[in-house]
Length: 502
Image (cartoon, rainbow, N blue to C red; front, side):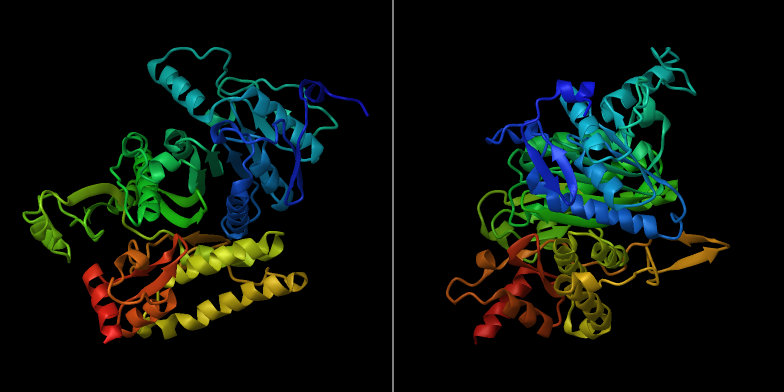
């Protein structure tokens, strides 16, 4: 077998197989810094979620029959883009990475799997911003003609191509899905991503930026995401909502609004997927969900600040606790601004649970979908019956997949809905993205921390049932296995627990 110049340049010593995609990784097996690693095995589930979301997006009526152009903006070894090309039909994949060793590995792995993808060797952020400034000032761009670009010769056996112009696809092309997976702050890519995303497109990020999201370095979160956070018992959700607020502001610059589709946490890695809707009105509507949070540092109580431009005369009156008056010093902090709307879209998650049947990761993704759907409903006694039929049907289908994967069946007859309301104009389906009028309650309470100290702690399922019997919405949350999400305040939660002991 003839060796290409890419094979000669690489000293391959590590081979991985992820969901039928072979990856040759030029990295040692010993542990190394996460930021320098090209392949992260801890984010396999995150990549599976993004691939399932792409397949769901492809099946929607307004994307059927169209070759979707998708960008893996920080390709590393190219695993995300190769998964899309391997498991989703009718997509054109472009993989971009500024590192030369990563660029060579992507070329090598695309040839190894016999998949045709475009490979780019420039930084998605730097190239876009630098040459956007040159065009605005009228300066010429070296090596770039406005309607053409230079191509390297295409290898007949490999089936991939490389573009060598300065701007290439990042500046001139629009994408229907953009995925950013990086161990550093992803906020630096938001401007370029939302500028080049199409209407009804999806921007997905996978981040392991622990310092900012876990409030280890609050100044880093302020610098990257434009919000103030601190160490709290609900810091995971606080970090997710901080990222969504940064994405909403970045999209609003280009008169685009966002609609969260799926937010999932896998150990220390976070995946956020949002749909983009063009229009100044949609941008204004998204910005309307940015609110500040008033946080008590003594008892961890929290509440959204009023949506007003006027100052609140007595902020402590917004909280259900009396720590501001009974404690010495200042105990209240103003956090954010953060996203105050829904974190996931119920209709999209239902479609993802159906699409997951087709893939080898159906069991893992199906489990995540069940948890997210339960959290979205966050039932009480009154609305539990209303949602039980739809939820039980979804759970039954996912459980059937887990036990009988060979009898998944054909899902072509399943009606695809991206939102609750959709209309048809001719052969084109027009879908209107709408926010949930009654989203699940914001944040959650850690039962180990908030249970009465003089009594034995109740099991989480028992606490959920007690809150529902009291008329509150309540459910468990996958973000913290020791916490309960509820519409009750901290004072009401403790009253319900104390009453159960009497």
